[in-house]
Image (cartoon, rainbow, N blue to C red; front, side, top):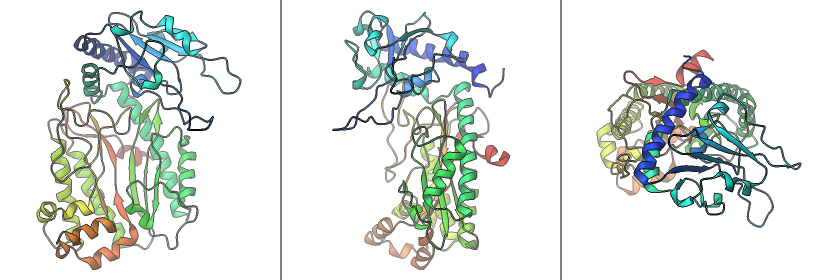
Length: 441
């Protein structure tokens, strides 16, 4: 079996989902799992809809991301059923007839009107775990999102099947193609908007298809963690470029960040190189049984060691961490689970019955607190930034002496650095999904 071919892996993947659903339904006391694909949302006081976003659980079962008003029904012991909405519509492009590697695994019913789904759904909605948003309600089928079912399904979504990993590898290839085009556009002097357009063209996806809005930041804009304004004119002089951008493959996401220095800005390039070396070591630390919270704390110490070496801070990494100085330079978490959602579910879950593992004190933006286990795919994205409002808080807290402000002034025009890969936890060494694709490109 080809371990990189989703079609060859799909049958086993579906079997895993069915076994998980069997247990989840038993825990919740339900007979059927019903998953609406979601509907269009209309803008207030207008007749335009927002871009459609499929129910994430729906797209884990089948590779369909543009199928509003459809329904997945699974009853233990039976083949899953797909109620496939294909309207008569000459205003819009309608979904193609079902085809592909997944079709043979479903009983498929095509409907022309949303209400035609009702006779095809289970007889008693009360016996159904209906997972979706309230707007998807149809007749008596109102999403109830039972906690016992969701806790179980979300917990195990963290453990990716080989099929899911294969799709995520495809998403890496697409995104790296865009990253290479974006770097070339930066080197050619393009604006943020121009770089963004080069990225989308190379990936072959627009803003409605990408898993999240591209972060394309030149110079000091890199100090804004989620900078998405996309300036139309390139600043002069060009000093630095940070891009955080991914791609989608049948609904599964990639999430990659790189930072570049313009030619002649050697000291900032040296700082990028130091973060890159540290980030590789953090990726290698993704091992079975390792606490992700500890990986985050270790990242703080590593990054503060870099700032100490570059003369930006005057205290030890341990002192910078203890006093909160490190959080001014590295204010976000080391990463998150990723899969069918960029920030995938159950990052704080204590177990498959629910519960929550809290973040370490002083680290409010960490997005995962679980212990790593085989099958988990996480991002590793350390960053160093020069953010005025956070640095002002360092002064107000009485820690100004911990920082060399002349060095801060030197690096401030570059904004910041972030480097991000996706890493699969295995039984052995970490499997970096991102680096080999850059190397091959």
